[in-house]
Length: 469
Image (cartoon, rainbow, N blue to C red; front, side):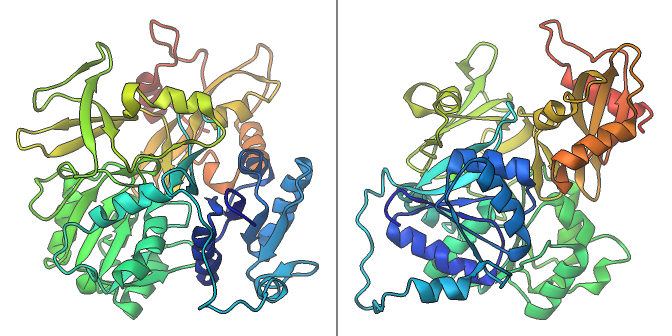
């Protein structure tokens, strides 16, 4: 393989670090995907990424092979465990070992400003698969700022608990930073449930962890939290969705010596968006970082908001911003304003001291546990049913899981399509995280705005009060 070739990695596995780091040295592009994707979703991913090698577990190999066959891709599958008629990782290393010593190995030459290091899966309001192309320079610029808050560089922490799968920016950054900053990465190959998190924290005593607000809420649930010793945690970062102030206060009450931060980041930033520390006001994501420039934009007038405490869309610019959406020039052009200002799609406001506060996500992406769910993707699947005239998907809040997808469906005249029919269609087509756990609501019409767009706010209000099947 050479510079610009693609290698795709699906699982969280301890040996994953070997091809991950090797690809960086070779200038090979790493694409990371959700290991729970089904055949149709994998086919969509492969159509964009077109990898030469896929690293995965043997249980996932059949689905991957089916998706590759549909696209007629001659891609090698390497599994971290052994499987019948499969190439294991140990066999792969033996097959391609040319005897080069570590001392004699030379990385490939490439332009770090232009060469893509990673493709990070993301999805916008279109619901179509997109991959944010992040260059070597992006990571080199942003990396030091992640720990600029620390005075003990290069060892800001002893052990970081990495519960998120590799397709999440938090896991990627810890893969990159742990050898540079000399801390141990505590990684799990299975989903980070409440019980598993308790076991990891009690056994290994990590000093740093990144959790979603929903997982943190589960971990500190009254009646359960006494089973976990949180005192080893010097720093806990909460992010991925809006962080309630009460949650931060409750964590501090349980473990007073633990610093708790509200963090904002995006795949497209290849980094967190703000510098935060213990002095940040409650509810704030922090203050501006030196590697970025910031603007708040009134989306109706497209003018800059210069006053404090006025919400607007956050735009960010800097050398760490991702290069493009891979093989998707239309989406790239849409997301960048003039002079490469990146439009985050998120609403923020700032106070007089330039602390920034997250308000809401303009984009429609739902968050179920650690999974991102596109309402449009679900809608496109449900519309395939011949008995469905129209559909809109929204989410209802859940304290344990974040949001549960709800399908609001308009039947065709004389159609007898049932809620179970809709759920079965989704189950046959999409992965487990995208199932309609919030239920199905049958309506006479989808609420619309004056401009004939789906009225998302009213839709959510209806979903909260109407009977769901």
